[in-house]
Image 1 (cartoon, helix red, strand yellow):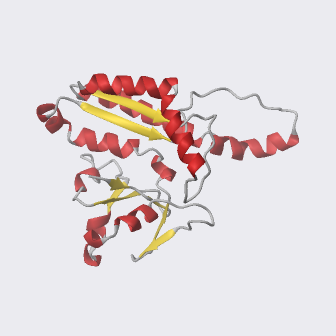
Image 2: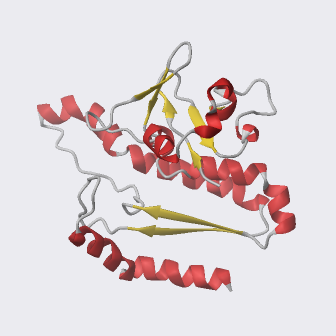
Image 3: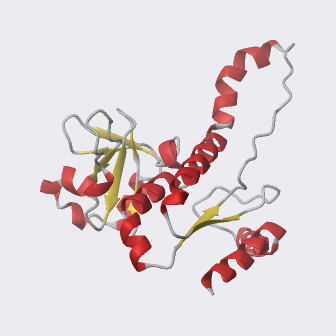
Length: 221
């Protein structure tokens, strides 16, 4: 099962696209709480939603300025979509929501849950950066640039906090990260060169990734 979750520009909700019905991820048990998810197959029930190509779902969930423009869907008012990373870059939030909704079945019928995070960058640790307060340029640009620079680190903090709160609801749940070292550079392109592939394959031998492999093997025994 796979769930795509592009972000709706107008209201910042997520449009959940899946080959299976997932309405249970779109509602809350408290009328005072807002639901931030919309199920694609129900919302576009009259447009053959289950006939959507997986390549189209991928495209709806991935945008990049000028290269991959925002997409538009046939609704009134029209739905405009941007990259899923606008709300959930690693996909953790929707993963945690899915697991939490099915927690009783999971605890009864499985020996536990393993969440694998495969990242293109290492998880940030929130290091304090020294700013040149005397610089006019810094004072003008920092209110804009710093939140953007820390955007994905902020998502890491939020995701770790959610994981901390759902963990006690499971008999066994573990989260393992595999990540490309920040020291390694791979081009942002539609095609990976031979050198790019070698960099990615060789990075599995870093100390962190080897520790993740060891932990994964232990959990699977």
